[in-house]
Length: 587
Image (cartoon, rainbow, N blue to C red; front, side, top):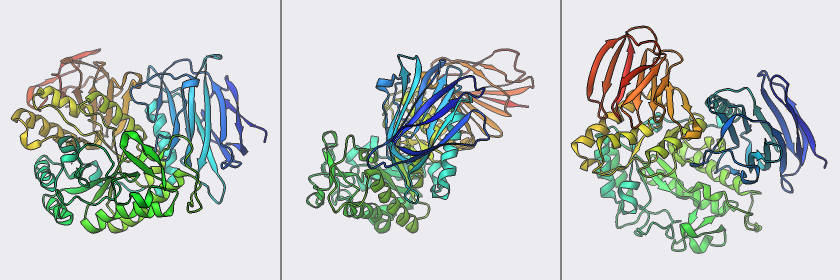
Protein backbone atom coordinates (compact mmCIF):
# COMPACT_ATOMS: atom_id res chain seq x y z
CA UNK A 1 0.00 0.00 0.00
CA UNK A 2 1.45 3.35 -1.06
CA UNK A 3 1.80 6.16 1.47
CA UNK A 4 -0.86 8.86 1.70
CA UNK A 5 0.04 12.54 2.04
CA UNK A 6 -1.28 15.48 4.03
CA UNK A 7 -0.34 19.15 4.31
CA UNK A 8 0.63 21.05 7.47
CA UNK A 9 0.15 24.80 7.02
CA UNK A 10 0.89 27.74 9.31
CA UNK A 11 -2.10 29.98 10.15
CA UNK A 12 -0.91 32.58 7.64
CA UNK A 13 -0.14 29.80 5.10
CA UNK A 14 3.40 31.16 4.81
CA UNK A 15 4.91 27.81 5.86
CA UNK A 16 3.79 24.49 4.43
CA UNK A 17 5.15 20.97 4.86
CA UNK A 18 3.94 17.69 3.39
CA UNK A 19 3.57 14.70 5.68
CA UNK A 20 3.20 11.02 4.89
CA UNK A 21 0.98 8.31 6.36
CA UNK A 22 1.59 4.62 5.68
CA UNK A 23 -0.64 1.58 6.39
CA UNK A 24 -3.81 3.69 6.32
CA UNK A 25 -6.84 3.20 4.10
CA UNK A 26 -7.81 6.88 4.23
CA UNK A 27 -6.39 10.19 5.47
CA UNK A 28 -8.92 13.03 5.51
CA UNK A 29 -8.38 16.62 6.60
CA UNK A 30 -11.35 17.61 8.76
CA UNK A 31 -13.00 21.04 8.69
CA UNK A 32 -12.26 23.34 11.63
CA UNK A 33 -13.60 26.63 12.97
CA UNK A 34 -10.28 27.39 14.66
CA UNK A 35 -7.67 28.94 12.35
CA UNK A 36 -4.32 27.42 13.21
CA UNK A 37 -5.76 24.06 14.32
CA UNK A 38 -5.38 21.23 11.82
CA UNK A 39 -7.15 17.88 12.20
CA UNK A 40 -6.75 14.74 10.13
CA UNK A 41 -8.91 11.62 10.41
CA UNK A 42 -6.90 8.46 9.79
CA UNK A 43 -8.32 4.96 9.32
CA UNK A 44 -5.84 2.14 9.81
CA UNK A 45 -5.59 -0.60 7.20
CA UNK A 46 -4.66 -3.56 9.44
CA UNK A 47 -3.05 -2.88 12.80
CA UNK A 48 -2.61 -6.62 13.37
CA UNK A 49 0.06 -6.68 10.68
CA UNK A 50 1.46 -3.15 10.54
CA UNK A 51 1.19 0.08 12.56
CA UNK A 52 0.09 3.33 11.00
CA UNK A 53 3.20 5.49 10.55
CA UNK A 54 2.90 9.28 10.36
CA UNK A 55 5.86 11.49 9.50
CA UNK A 56 6.43 15.19 8.88
CA UNK A 57 8.79 18.01 9.79
CA UNK A 58 8.05 21.51 11.08
CA UNK A 59 10.26 24.52 11.92
CA UNK A 60 10.09 25.37 15.64
CA UNK A 61 12.90 27.87 16.07
CA UNK A 62 11.99 29.51 19.39
CA UNK A 63 11.12 26.57 21.66
CA UNK A 64 13.04 26.09 24.90
CA UNK A 65 11.56 22.70 25.77
CA UNK A 66 9.23 19.95 24.62
CA UNK A 67 6.54 19.36 27.24
CA UNK A 68 5.58 15.68 27.34
CA UNK A 69 3.10 13.64 29.34
CA UNK A 70 5.79 11.94 31.41
CA UNK A 71 9.32 13.27 31.24
CA UNK A 72 10.92 13.32 34.68
CA UNK A 73 13.49 16.00 35.38
CA UNK A 74 14.76 16.33 31.79
CA UNK A 75 13.14 19.41 30.27
CA UNK A 76 15.08 19.50 27.02
CA UNK A 77 14.56 19.49 23.27
CA UNK A 78 15.18 15.84 22.38
CA UNK A 79 16.82 14.74 19.16
CA UNK A 80 14.88 12.65 16.68
CA UNK A 81 17.16 9.66 17.30
CA UNK A 82 16.60 9.83 21.06
CA UNK A 83 12.97 10.84 21.27
CA UNK A 84 11.05 7.60 21.04
CA UNK A 85 8.35 7.31 23.68
CA UNK A 86 6.10 4.29 24.03
CA UNK A 87 2.52 5.23 24.87
CA UNK A 88 -0.05 2.79 26.20
CA UNK A 89 -3.40 2.92 27.96
CA UNK A 90 -1.45 2.54 31.20
CA UNK A 91 1.58 4.69 30.43
CA UNK A 92 1.98 8.25 29.16
CA UNK A 93 -0.45 9.95 26.76
CA UNK A 94 -0.42 10.87 23.04
CA UNK A 95 0.40 14.56 23.37
CA UNK A 96 3.42 16.87 23.28
CA UNK A 97 3.79 20.65 23.32
CA UNK A 98 6.73 22.83 22.33
CA UNK A 99 7.06 25.77 24.72
CA UNK A 100 8.86 29.08 24.19
CA UNK A 101 10.55 31.11 26.95
CA UNK A 102 7.39 33.25 27.17
CA UNK A 103 5.28 30.12 27.84
CA UNK A 104 3.54 30.15 24.47
CA UNK A 105 3.35 26.97 22.43
CA UNK A 106 4.26 27.32 18.76
CA UNK A 107 3.16 23.73 18.17
CA UNK A 108 1.11 21.24 20.20
CA UNK A 109 0.44 17.79 18.77
CA UNK A 110 -2.01 15.18 20.01
CA UNK A 111 -3.90 12.07 18.99
CA UNK A 112 -7.48 11.24 19.85
CA UNK A 113 -8.47 9.32 22.96
CA UNK A 114 -9.23 6.22 20.89
CA UNK A 115 -5.48 5.54 20.61
CA UNK A 116 -4.38 2.83 23.03
CA UNK A 117 -0.77 2.40 22.02
CA UNK A 118 2.13 3.35 19.79
CA UNK A 119 5.43 5.18 19.54
CA UNK A 120 5.25 8.97 19.91
CA UNK A 121 8.59 10.33 18.75
CA UNK A 122 9.28 14.05 18.30
CA UNK A 123 12.77 15.53 18.15
CA UNK A 124 15.31 17.77 16.47
CA UNK A 125 16.34 16.60 13.01
CA UNK A 126 20.01 17.52 12.75
CA UNK A 127 20.04 17.51 8.96
CA UNK A 128 17.22 20.05 8.52
CA UNK A 129 17.27 21.94 11.88
CA UNK A 130 13.53 21.31 12.05
CA UNK A 131 11.49 19.14 14.36
CA UNK A 132 10.82 15.64 13.04
CA UNK A 133 7.51 14.05 14.04
CA UNK A 134 7.40 10.25 13.79
CA UNK A 135 4.31 8.57 15.16
CA UNK A 136 3.68 4.82 14.89
CA UNK A 137 0.21 3.81 16.07
CA UNK A 138 -0.30 0.09 16.71
CA UNK A 139 -3.42 -0.08 18.92
CA UNK A 140 -6.66 1.85 18.46
CA UNK A 141 -10.04 1.11 20.01
CA UNK A 142 -12.19 -0.22 17.14
CA UNK A 143 -15.67 1.09 16.46
CA UNK A 144 -17.73 -1.29 14.30
CA UNK A 145 -14.49 -3.02 13.39
CA UNK A 146 -12.83 0.19 12.15
CA UNK A 147 -9.66 1.55 13.76
CA UNK A 148 -10.15 5.29 13.36
CA UNK A 149 -8.28 8.12 15.10
CA UNK A 150 -7.53 11.81 14.69
CA UNK A 151 -4.22 13.68 14.49
CA UNK A 152 -4.55 17.23 15.85
CA UNK A 153 -1.91 19.94 15.31
CA UNK A 154 -2.30 23.31 17.08
CA UNK A 155 -0.14 26.12 15.64
CA UNK A 156 -1.92 29.11 17.21
CA UNK A 157 0.75 30.09 19.73
CA UNK A 158 -1.46 29.86 22.82
CA UNK A 159 -0.07 29.70 26.35
CA UNK A 160 1.02 26.06 26.61
CA UNK A 161 -1.39 25.39 29.50
CA UNK A 162 -4.32 26.62 27.41
CA UNK A 163 -3.15 24.54 24.43
CA UNK A 164 -3.01 21.44 26.64
CA UNK A 165 -6.37 22.33 28.17
CA UNK A 166 -7.92 22.28 24.71
CA UNK A 167 -6.40 18.85 24.10
CA UNK A 168 -7.95 17.50 27.31
CA UNK A 169 -11.27 19.19 26.47
CA UNK A 170 -11.19 17.40 23.11
CA UNK A 171 -10.51 14.06 24.80
CA UNK A 172 -13.34 14.64 27.27
CA UNK A 173 -15.75 15.42 24.42
CA UNK A 174 -14.68 12.26 22.60
CA UNK A 175 -15.17 10.06 25.66
CA UNK A 176 -18.45 11.70 26.67
CA UNK A 177 -20.34 9.93 29.43
CA UNK A 178 -17.70 7.20 29.60
CA UNK A 179 -15.66 9.54 31.85
CA UNK A 180 -16.26 8.48 35.44
CA UNK A 181 -17.52 11.17 37.84
CA UNK A 182 -15.10 12.45 40.50
CA UNK A 183 -16.49 12.41 44.07
CA UNK A 184 -15.95 15.61 46.03
CA UNK A 185 -14.01 13.58 48.59
CA UNK A 186 -11.26 13.09 46.00
CA UNK A 187 -10.37 16.79 46.45
CA UNK A 188 -9.98 16.50 50.23
CA UNK A 189 -6.69 16.00 52.11
CA UNK A 190 -5.84 12.39 52.91
CA UNK A 191 -3.43 10.48 55.11
CA UNK A 192 -1.19 7.78 53.62
CA UNK A 193 0.61 5.09 55.58
CA UNK A 194 3.46 4.57 53.11
CA UNK A 195 6.25 6.87 54.32
CA UNK A 196 5.17 6.71 57.96
CA UNK A 197 4.82 2.91 58.16
CA UNK A 198 6.05 1.31 54.93
CA UNK A 199 5.32 -2.42 55.14
CA UNK A 200 5.20 -2.34 58.96
CA UNK A 201 1.59 -1.20 58.83
CA UNK A 202 -1.01 -2.77 61.13
CA UNK A 203 -4.66 -2.37 62.00
CA UNK A 204 -3.62 -0.65 65.21
CA UNK A 205 -1.32 1.85 63.47
CA UNK A 206 -3.92 2.62 60.78
CA UNK A 207 -6.60 3.33 63.37
CA UNK A 208 -4.20 5.58 65.26
CA UNK A 209 -3.33 7.48 62.08
CA UNK A 210 -7.01 7.84 61.26
CA UNK A 211 -7.80 9.38 64.64
CA UNK A 212 -4.84 11.75 64.45
CA UNK A 213 -5.34 12.85 60.85
CA UNK A 214 -9.05 13.45 61.40
CA UNK A 215 -8.00 16.15 63.87
CA UNK A 216 -6.11 17.87 61.04
CA UNK A 217 -9.02 17.76 58.62
CA UNK A 218 -8.03 14.73 56.55
CA UNK A 219 -11.01 12.91 55.07
CA UNK A 220 -9.58 9.50 54.16
CA UNK A 221 -6.75 7.17 55.09
CA UNK A 222 -4.88 5.33 52.35
CA UNK A 223 -3.51 2.02 53.61
CA UNK A 224 -0.52 1.17 51.45
CA UNK A 225 1.57 -1.95 50.93
CA UNK A 226 2.01 -4.27 53.91
CA UNK A 227 -1.55 -5.20 54.86
CA UNK A 228 -1.34 -8.38 52.75
CA UNK A 229 2.02 -9.75 53.90
CA UNK A 230 4.19 -10.34 56.95
CA UNK A 231 7.28 -9.89 54.78
CA UNK A 232 8.78 -6.40 55.22
CA UNK A 233 11.72 -6.68 52.80
CA UNK A 234 10.04 -4.22 50.36
CA UNK A 235 9.72 -6.84 47.60
CA UNK A 236 6.58 -8.22 45.96
CA UNK A 237 7.21 -11.96 45.95
CA UNK A 238 4.17 -12.48 48.23
CA UNK A 239 1.72 -10.46 46.10
CA UNK A 240 -1.14 -12.01 44.17
CA UNK A 241 -3.62 -13.35 46.74
CA UNK A 242 -4.66 -9.99 48.20
CA UNK A 243 -5.80 -11.36 51.52
CA UNK A 244 -5.04 -9.58 54.82
CA UNK A 245 -2.32 -11.07 56.95
CA UNK A 246 -3.81 -12.46 60.14
CA UNK A 247 -0.95 -11.29 62.34
CA UNK A 248 -1.52 -7.55 61.82
CA UNK A 249 -5.03 -7.38 60.31
CA UNK A 250 -6.90 -10.22 62.08
CA UNK A 251 -10.41 -8.92 61.27
CA UNK A 252 -10.39 -6.62 58.25
CA UNK A 253 -14.11 -5.79 58.22
CA UNK A 254 -14.12 -4.86 61.91
CA UNK A 255 -10.95 -2.83 61.44
CA UNK A 256 -12.46 -0.86 58.55
CA UNK A 257 -15.56 -0.23 60.67
CA UNK A 258 -13.38 1.26 63.43
CA UNK A 259 -11.67 3.57 60.93
CA UNK A 260 -15.09 4.70 59.70
CA UNK A 261 -15.96 5.63 63.28
CA UNK A 262 -13.23 8.29 63.13
CA UNK A 263 -15.08 9.91 60.23
CA UNK A 264 -12.54 8.89 57.59
CA UNK A 265 -13.04 6.88 54.42
CA UNK A 266 -10.78 3.90 53.80
CA UNK A 267 -8.69 3.44 50.64
CA UNK A 268 -6.71 0.20 50.21
CA UNK A 269 -3.57 -0.44 48.14
CA UNK A 270 -3.57 -3.26 45.59
CA UNK A 271 -1.11 -3.92 42.74
CA UNK A 272 -3.30 -5.92 40.32
CA UNK A 273 -0.61 -6.84 37.77
CA UNK A 274 1.76 -8.45 40.28
CA UNK A 275 1.98 -12.10 41.22
CA UNK A 276 4.83 -13.47 43.32
CA UNK A 277 6.13 -17.00 43.51
CA UNK A 278 5.26 -17.19 47.23
CA UNK A 279 1.57 -16.50 46.63
CA UNK A 280 -1.04 -19.25 46.74
CA UNK A 281 -2.15 -18.25 43.24
CA UNK A 282 1.32 -18.70 41.72
CA UNK A 283 0.90 -22.29 40.51
CA UNK A 284 -2.42 -21.43 38.88
CA UNK A 285 -1.13 -18.41 36.95
CA UNK A 286 2.63 -18.83 36.54
CA UNK A 287 2.13 -19.79 32.88
CA UNK A 288 -0.12 -16.80 32.20
CA UNK A 289 2.30 -13.94 32.77
CA UNK A 290 4.03 -11.42 30.54
CA UNK A 291 7.31 -12.18 32.32
CA UNK A 292 9.34 -11.66 35.47
CA UNK A 293 10.59 -8.27 36.69
CA UNK A 294 13.79 -8.51 38.73
CA UNK A 295 13.30 -5.15 40.41
CA UNK A 296 9.89 -6.20 41.73
CA UNK A 297 10.74 -9.86 42.51
CA UNK A 298 7.39 -10.67 40.92
CA UNK A 299 5.85 -11.54 37.57
CA UNK A 300 3.27 -9.54 35.61
CA UNK A 301 -0.07 -11.22 35.01
CA UNK A 302 -1.20 -11.35 31.37
CA UNK A 303 -4.67 -9.75 31.11
CA UNK A 304 -5.29 -11.23 27.67
CA UNK A 305 -6.53 -14.37 29.45
CA UNK A 306 -10.09 -14.40 30.86
CA UNK A 307 -9.13 -16.45 33.94
CA UNK A 308 -6.47 -13.87 34.80
CA UNK A 309 -8.97 -11.05 34.48
CA UNK A 310 -11.47 -12.90 36.68
CA UNK A 311 -8.80 -13.35 39.37
CA UNK A 312 -7.85 -9.66 39.32
CA UNK A 313 -11.45 -8.45 39.30
CA UNK A 314 -12.37 -10.60 42.31
CA UNK A 315 -9.27 -9.40 44.19
CA UNK A 316 -10.35 -5.78 43.65
CA UNK A 317 -14.05 -6.29 44.40
CA UNK A 318 -13.57 -8.29 47.62
CA UNK A 319 -12.29 -5.37 49.78
CA UNK A 320 -15.32 -3.23 48.92
CA UNK A 321 -17.90 -6.00 49.00
CA UNK A 322 -16.68 -7.95 52.03
CA UNK A 323 -14.71 -5.48 54.15
CA UNK A 324 -16.45 -2.18 53.43
CA UNK A 325 -13.54 -0.17 52.07
CA UNK A 326 -14.39 3.01 50.16
CA UNK A 327 -11.72 3.02 47.48
CA UNK A 328 -8.68 1.38 45.96
CA UNK A 329 -5.18 2.60 45.27
CA UNK A 330 -4.33 0.60 42.14
CA UNK A 331 -0.56 0.47 41.77
CA UNK A 332 2.05 -0.74 39.26
CA UNK A 333 -0.50 -0.47 36.47
CA UNK A 334 2.23 0.71 34.09
CA UNK A 335 3.96 -2.67 34.39
CA UNK A 336 1.34 -3.82 31.88
CA UNK A 337 3.03 -1.53 29.36
CA UNK A 338 5.34 -4.43 28.65
CA UNK A 339 8.58 -3.55 26.86
CA UNK A 340 8.95 -5.62 23.73
CA UNK A 341 6.53 -8.11 22.25
CA UNK A 342 4.37 -10.02 24.75
CA UNK A 343 4.58 -13.82 24.82
CA UNK A 344 2.70 -15.73 22.14
CA UNK A 345 -0.95 -16.09 23.07
CA UNK A 346 -2.26 -19.60 23.70
CA UNK A 347 -5.75 -20.63 22.54
CA UNK A 348 -7.11 -19.69 25.99
CA UNK A 349 -6.44 -16.00 25.33
CA UNK A 350 -9.19 -13.82 23.91
CA UNK A 351 -7.64 -10.35 23.47
CA UNK A 352 -5.59 -9.12 20.53
CA UNK A 353 -3.49 -6.78 22.67
CA UNK A 354 -2.46 -6.34 26.29
CA UNK A 355 -4.10 -2.91 26.37
CA UNK A 356 -7.40 -4.42 25.32
CA UNK A 357 -7.15 -6.92 28.19
CA UNK A 358 -6.23 -4.17 30.67
CA UNK A 359 -9.26 -2.10 29.74
CA UNK A 360 -11.53 -5.14 30.09
CA UNK A 361 -10.13 -5.62 33.62
CA UNK A 362 -10.81 -2.02 34.59
CA UNK A 363 -14.24 -1.97 32.96
CA UNK A 364 -15.32 -5.03 34.96
CA UNK A 365 -13.87 -3.67 38.22
CA UNK A 366 -15.41 -0.24 37.70
CA UNK A 367 -18.87 -1.53 36.78
CA UNK A 368 -19.20 -3.80 39.81
CA UNK A 369 -17.59 -1.47 42.34
CA UNK A 370 -19.68 1.51 41.32
CA UNK A 371 -22.76 -0.67 41.69
CA UNK A 372 -21.64 -1.46 45.23
CA UNK A 373 -20.42 2.06 46.03
CA UNK A 374 -21.30 4.86 43.55
CA UNK A 375 -18.90 7.31 45.21
CA UNK A 376 -15.97 4.90 44.94
CA UNK A 377 -12.44 6.36 45.01
CA UNK A 378 -9.82 4.99 42.59
CA UNK A 379 -6.24 6.27 42.77
CA UNK A 380 -3.85 5.94 39.84
CA UNK A 381 -0.19 7.03 39.84
CA UNK A 382 1.46 9.61 37.63
CA UNK A 383 2.63 7.61 34.66
CA UNK A 384 -0.91 6.32 34.15
CA UNK A 385 -2.04 9.60 32.57
CA UNK A 386 -3.74 8.39 29.38
CA UNK A 387 -7.26 9.72 28.78
CA UNK A 388 -8.23 6.07 28.36
CA UNK A 389 -8.05 5.79 32.16
CA UNK A 390 -10.48 8.65 32.75
CA UNK A 391 -13.13 5.95 32.36
CA UNK A 392 -12.00 4.36 35.62
CA UNK A 393 -9.86 6.55 37.91
CA UNK A 394 -11.02 9.42 40.11
CA UNK A 395 -7.71 10.85 41.31
CA UNK A 396 -4.15 10.84 40.08
CA UNK A 397 -1.16 10.97 42.43
CA UNK A 398 2.25 12.41 41.61
CA UNK A 399 4.97 9.80 41.25
CA UNK A 400 7.10 8.94 44.27
CA UNK A 401 9.55 11.72 45.22
CA UNK A 402 10.03 11.44 48.97
CA UNK A 403 11.08 14.69 50.70
CA UNK A 404 11.60 16.45 47.35
CA UNK A 405 9.41 19.55 47.38
CA UNK A 406 10.69 20.72 43.99
CA UNK A 407 9.98 17.45 42.24
CA UNK A 408 6.58 17.21 43.91
CA UNK A 409 5.81 20.67 42.52
CA UNK A 410 6.82 19.67 39.00
CA UNK A 411 4.96 16.39 39.09
CA UNK A 412 1.72 17.76 40.51
CA UNK A 413 1.64 20.59 37.97
CA UNK A 414 2.41 18.17 35.14
CA UNK A 415 -0.48 16.00 36.32
CA UNK A 416 -2.86 18.94 36.57
CA UNK A 417 -2.17 19.89 32.96
CA UNK A 418 -3.42 16.51 31.72
CA UNK A 419 -5.91 15.51 34.42
CA UNK A 420 -9.03 16.41 32.50
CA UNK A 421 -11.01 17.08 35.67
CA UNK A 422 -9.53 14.21 37.69
CA UNK A 423 -8.41 15.27 41.15
CA UNK A 424 -4.61 15.46 41.39
CA UNK A 425 -2.84 14.46 44.61
CA UNK A 426 0.67 15.16 45.78
CA UNK A 427 3.13 12.46 46.50
CA UNK A 428 2.94 11.86 50.22
CA UNK A 429 4.38 14.72 52.26
CA UNK A 430 7.09 13.91 54.78
CA UNK A 431 9.88 15.77 56.56
CA UNK A 432 12.51 15.27 59.22
CA UNK A 433 11.35 15.94 62.80
CA UNK A 434 14.25 18.36 63.16
CA UNK A 435 13.45 20.36 60.03
CA UNK A 436 12.83 24.10 60.25
CA UNK A 437 9.28 25.40 60.15
CA UNK A 438 10.07 27.02 56.79
CA UNK A 439 11.21 23.67 55.35
CA UNK A 440 7.94 22.05 56.42
CA UNK A 441 5.98 24.91 54.84
CA UNK A 442 7.90 24.46 51.58
CA UNK A 443 6.65 20.87 51.39
CA UNK A 444 3.07 22.16 51.32
CA UNK A 445 3.81 25.14 49.05
CA UNK A 446 5.37 22.80 46.50
CA UNK A 447 2.07 20.95 46.14
CA UNK A 448 -0.22 23.93 46.61
CA UNK A 449 -2.14 23.28 43.39
CA UNK A 450 -3.01 19.69 44.25
CA UNK A 451 -4.73 17.76 47.01
CA UNK A 452 -2.22 16.96 49.75
CA UNK A 453 -1.46 13.50 51.04
CA UNK A 454 0.37 13.52 54.39
CA UNK A 455 2.52 10.66 55.69
CA UNK A 456 4.22 11.60 58.96
CA UNK A 457 3.52 10.72 62.59
CA UNK A 458 1.09 13.53 63.29
CA UNK A 459 0.84 12.67 66.99
CA UNK A 460 4.57 13.29 67.37
CA UNK A 461 4.77 16.71 65.69
CA UNK A 462 6.48 19.49 67.59
CA UNK A 463 4.22 22.45 68.45
CA UNK A 464 6.01 24.50 65.77
CA UNK A 465 5.45 21.88 63.06
CA UNK A 466 1.86 21.38 64.19
CA UNK A 467 1.11 25.07 63.64
CA UNK A 468 2.62 24.97 60.14
CA UNK A 469 0.73 21.82 59.15
CA UNK A 470 -2.60 23.06 60.44
CA UNK A 471 -2.16 26.41 58.73
CA UNK A 472 -1.30 25.10 55.27
CA UNK A 473 -3.90 22.32 55.31
CA UNK A 474 -6.45 24.98 56.28
CA UNK A 475 -5.19 27.39 53.61
CA UNK A 476 -5.43 24.73 50.89
CA UNK A 477 -8.97 23.83 51.94
CA UNK A 478 -10.11 27.45 52.20
CA UNK A 479 -8.82 28.36 48.76
CA UNK A 480 -9.57 25.08 46.96
CA UNK A 481 -11.91 26.86 44.55
CA UNK A 482 -8.94 28.74 43.06
CA UNK A 483 -6.17 26.22 43.75
CA UNK A 484 -7.93 23.08 42.50
CA UNK A 485 -10.78 24.30 40.32
CA UNK A 486 -9.53 27.65 39.00
CA UNK A 487 -7.61 28.44 35.83
CA UNK A 488 -4.10 27.03 36.24
CA UNK A 489 -1.26 29.02 34.65
CA UNK A 490 2.25 27.68 35.28
CA UNK A 491 5.35 29.45 33.98
CA UNK A 492 8.62 28.21 32.52
CA UNK A 493 8.30 24.42 32.32
CA UNK A 494 11.87 24.38 30.98
CA UNK A 495 12.99 25.67 34.42
CA UNK A 496 10.67 23.33 36.36
CA UNK A 497 8.00 25.99 36.91
CA UNK A 498 9.41 29.19 38.38
CA UNK A 499 5.91 30.45 39.23
CA UNK A 500 2.49 28.83 39.27
CA UNK A 501 -0.79 30.74 39.41
CA UNK A 502 -4.41 29.72 39.74
CA UNK A 503 -7.42 31.99 39.63
CA UNK A 504 -11.11 31.82 40.47
CA UNK A 505 -13.59 34.63 39.92
CA UNK A 506 -12.61 36.36 43.16
CA UNK A 507 -9.14 35.11 44.10
CA UNK A 508 -5.79 34.67 42.42
CA UNK A 509 -3.04 32.64 44.08
CA UNK A 510 0.53 32.98 42.83
CA UNK A 511 3.25 30.71 44.20
CA UNK A 512 6.73 32.05 43.58
CA UNK A 513 9.58 29.52 43.40
CA UNK A 514 12.42 31.18 41.47
CA UNK A 515 11.50 34.35 39.57
CA UNK A 516 10.57 36.92 42.29
CA UNK A 517 8.78 39.31 39.89
CA UNK A 518 5.03 38.66 39.79
CA UNK A 519 3.36 40.29 36.79
CA UNK A 520 -0.41 40.58 37.10
CA UNK A 521 -2.21 41.07 33.79
CA UNK A 522 -5.30 42.31 35.63
CA UNK A 523 -5.72 42.93 39.38
CA UNK A 524 -7.93 40.44 41.22
CA UNK A 525 -10.19 41.38 44.16
CA UNK A 526 -7.89 39.21 46.28
CA UNK A 527 -4.36 38.22 45.32
CA UNK A 528 -2.42 35.77 47.49
CA UNK A 529 1.34 35.76 47.00
CA UNK A 530 3.00 32.64 48.40
CA UNK A 531 6.76 32.70 48.85
CA UNK A 532 8.15 29.30 47.90
CA UNK A 533 11.56 30.77 47.12
CA UNK A 534 14.64 31.22 49.27
CA UNK A 535 14.53 35.03 49.36
CA UNK A 536 12.31 37.14 51.69
CA UNK A 537 11.20 39.70 49.10
CA UNK A 538 8.78 39.60 46.16
CA UNK A 539 8.08 42.23 43.49
CA UNK A 540 4.62 42.85 42.05
CA UNK A 541 3.83 44.59 38.78
CA UNK A 542 0.29 45.42 37.70
CA UNK A 543 -1.40 45.48 41.12
CA UNK A 544 -3.54 48.41 39.95
CA UNK A 545 -4.02 51.97 41.21
CA UNK A 546 -6.76 51.28 43.77
CA UNK A 547 -5.99 51.24 47.51
CA UNK A 548 -5.41 47.76 48.92
CA UNK A 549 -5.05 46.14 52.28
CA UNK A 550 -1.75 44.26 52.53
CA UNK A 551 -1.44 41.50 55.14
CA UNK A 552 1.83 39.60 55.47
CA UNK A 553 2.02 36.31 57.41
CA UNK A 554 4.84 33.92 58.26
CA UNK A 555 5.12 30.24 57.37
CA UNK A 556 2.70 29.20 60.12
CA UNK A 557 0.11 31.86 59.31
CA UNK A 558 1.01 34.28 62.10
CA UNK A 559 0.21 37.80 60.96
CA UNK A 560 3.30 40.02 60.86
CA UNK A 561 2.03 43.25 59.31
CA UNK A 562 -1.27 44.77 58.18
CA UNK A 563 -1.27 48.03 56.21
CA UNK A 564 -3.46 50.00 53.84
CA UNK A 565 -1.60 51.36 50.85
CA UNK A 566 -1.79 52.19 47.16
CA UNK A 567 0.52 50.10 44.98
CA UNK A 568 3.13 52.22 43.21
CA UNK A 569 3.55 52.33 39.46
CA UNK A 570 6.15 49.87 38.22
CA UNK A 571 7.57 47.23 40.56
CA UNK A 572 6.17 47.07 44.07
CA UNK A 573 8.56 45.37 46.52
CA UNK A 574 6.89 43.41 49.31
CA UNK A 575 8.74 41.80 52.20
CA UNK A 576 7.39 38.26 52.51
CA UNK A 577 9.22 35.75 54.71
CA UNK A 578 10.35 32.46 53.20
CA UNK A 579 7.45 30.04 53.38
CA UNK A 580 5.05 32.87 54.16
CA UNK A 581 2.44 34.77 52.19
CA UNK A 582 1.08 38.21 51.42
CA UNK A 583 -2.62 38.91 50.97
CA UNK A 584 -3.41 41.87 48.71
CA UNK A 585 -7.10 42.79 48.85
CA UNK A 586 -8.68 45.66 46.97
CA UNK A 587 -10.58 48.13 49.13
